Image 1: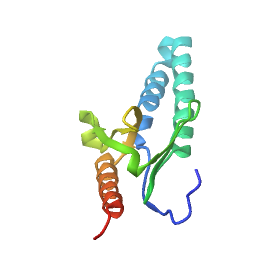
Image 2: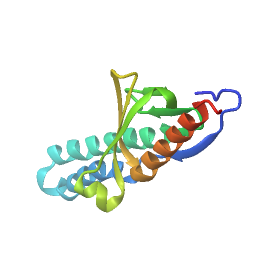
Image 3: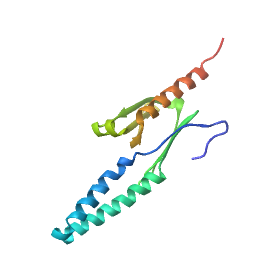
Image 4: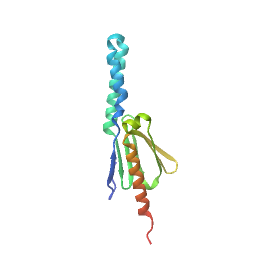
Length: 149
């Protein structure tokens, strides 16, 4: 997504490497059991490999940017989600971190905008920092919009 005139990127978030844990586990278990389980293990290994490739494409093609005017999100490979939400339109920015997410520092972010639309994206690295930056920029945008006397 292109930036508007006088728009600058303030913060850039990425997806977390934990996105690869599921495919890695499937590859590991499939690889270990190929000699005993044969075809079933080979299929498991192949699915893990395919899942890993799709996860890598998702990881490398995703972008979450906060500008001084909007939140720009592009995530996914097969099912691509693209959001461009104005900071003045955001009603709520919410964060959910599962217990493993707290340990490894990843989480899911939900943005409620337009009082009826909800945009969610998962596996964001350093989500608390991103949410804090968004809230900080929302406050700055509201302060700029207030009339001065």
